Image 1 (cartoon, rainbow, N blue to C red):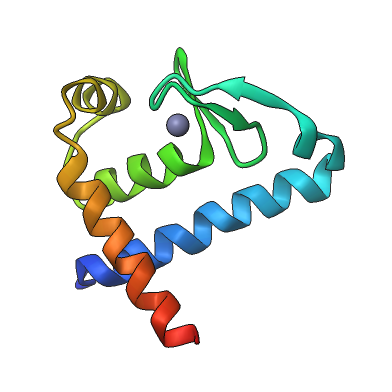
Image 2 (cartoon, rainbow, N blue to C red):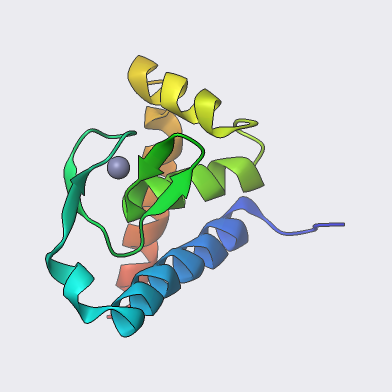
Length: 109
Ligand SMILES: [Zn+2]
């Protein structure tokens, strides 16, 4: 059973997401220059660290949101995430992650 706090889960997911970018770049350095349109945020993003979920390809930023959201039981599957993204219902979760990132950076400095 998980006894982790949301902060710990976010921290863990950030490490995992960063590692996915690193792994992709290690495996294929050329992918640093390959871009695609993310199916979730709609932005043109680097393919490194992106993941294909069923019919959707998500950029690394959205992968972080997706995996964190799954871990925190904010949504059940990727369709939930896509729908939520469209409705901007995710803003709360996104700002939560951003706050956590800011907090960590202030620790690092
Ligand atoms: Zn995205």
